[in-house]
Image (cartoon, rainbow, N blue to C red):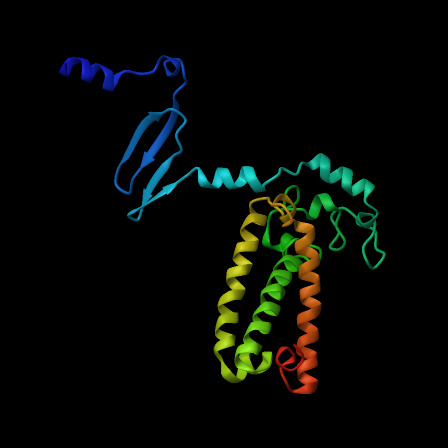
Length: 228
């Protein structure tokens, strides 16, 4: 009886005998161990915590799309807005501004801070738009709760300035790293959350936040408290 139980506990189903074994690296802080599993996700132990290395791949499959050089060149030739800048200048290869789309995109252009932070680079509008979206929401909530204008929250009360100083490098870092790795905002989308929607929301938020600052400087009162 004991022998039959042992055999049944170690038996491998017939359907899995021909299944290929996927290599898996199990790493720890002080030792390394190689093992083989049947397509199982990889795990790593770092700093006392276990992290599944398949999470990033799952997120990429759901939200990421590859943008090829051929697609960029096709859009560059067919899109009228890519044939001249808002000031009427024609993009020229190697020029300071404007640059052709294939040269300014992180996927095909130069992956440096100077390139992505150029006037027509990917970083300035992305970072400013995200900061403006966070800022306009923060201003609405904070003004309702405190009754102070944005200027008073930043410089008179002081706590708003602390949060702002902490938020700017955080959003900037989260925006810059993918670009330095060759990924623009157009490479990510999830249902209604697309790069086009983010750009338009960011532009509207930048205009709205600037309008909020100018209005409060004239009326010397919080807009969201008095008018909403």
